[in-house]
Image 1 (tube, rainbow, N blue to C red):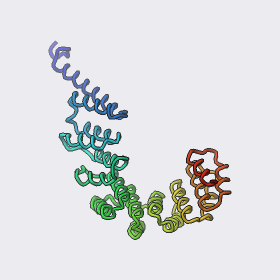
Image 2 (image 1 turned 180 degrees about the vertical axis):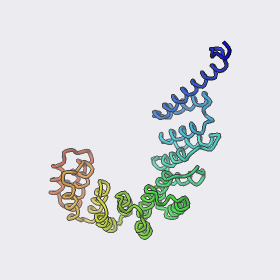
Image 3 (image 1 turned 45 degrees about the vertical axis):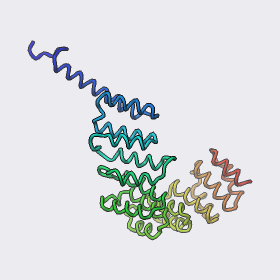
Length: 300
């Protein structure tokens, strides 16, 4: 019958090819998502080339991101350089930046170097926080200020993730004036993440009095969370602020988990109250290795 679809017809062969291609694409995507070793990644890469999917910017992006996730940023860059077309979004580039930042074998400055050498398509709110963290770890106010300028240019400076990263950067680098200026203009004053960023930043730079001052201000605006209390307990340990530690313990009655409990034991110990440290330790329903380590150091 004219127009009937048969096994030998060109249309049937085209449909079969299309179905096979879709099935192979889905399989490769699943393999990339579950990939846990570089050996497997090389095998998947070979399969992508064999399936002629290596010219797809989408597959190139996912391949780069997988290499970065496996802490192989140099391999990720080599795949990026061989990509025939510009990648559709900043996902792959962001993955490489994070990979350099969290690699134990490379300097955080490599994240910033990559950012300066490889133009990123449409940088977004996930691009800049790791770069600002790298600048903070490198104690580079100059580089961080340049990133701040880029955020202003892209109108990303008010985005919560970028805003908290900026606060943490300035506070970590000891530029309390810039941190306070930025904080005073913050559109997110009711979000505890903003307060945590500046408090933890001051803690990292050893500005314990500034951190404690911001904690007292925080209580007027919003509720502290676990991150806040752990940062402030570290401040109390530095200052010997035993009364603040006792206030925090009282405020957390019934809500003391392993992390906070361990921080309380450590703070009481460093503030000179071994009895309080032992009391908190004995009352903890769950303890980990760090809890025991802190308690042993307390009584030695």
